Image (tube, rainbow, N blue to C red):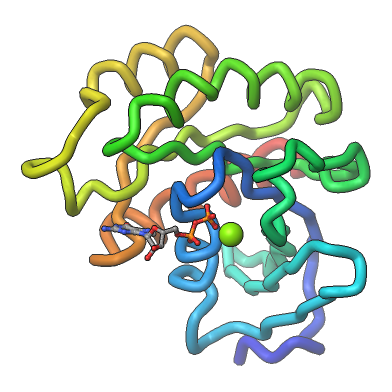
Length: 178
Ligand code: GDP
Ligand code: MG
């Protein structure tokens, strides 16, 4: 089963980053809903969820950190990034500014994150693509290519590509670790 106490072969930390209201918390709750143990530490201002994932014959416990709204005040500190092996860098395809701000998030990742961190670029809210898209899929693709990142558009609302986004990060981290 996927119980919290199950023996795992690897434990690693990953973080969610990106502007406020791009859908980070909903992506995490979508990914971790039902099957997973949720552990909340409101006293230190971040929340995280665990999910156990089987990759080949190994059981990986991914601890995924979510901001508790600090990104609003640019108050994410180095401790948030410390020890993180992966990051989902999220923007909102319906708000161009959240894409422009990726430059700032990438700078912060380079400053605080480890150099071999696996970063997956995520353009969220793809369910609104027809009515409200402000960032072309090609823009996401070329930024990802330029920066050497994986890239996916997701919808936390409609559960499109959410599993794929997290699993692509997790399997890449596993490749690096093993
Ligand atoms: P966070 O601040 O980055 O953690 O963003 P939240 O997860 O709190 O989401 C911000 C707002 O966007 C909320 O109103 C969500 O309901 C909405 N939202 C999140 N993901 C999606 C999505 O995939 N599609 C749509 N249409 N709305 C979304
Ligand atoms: Mg949030």
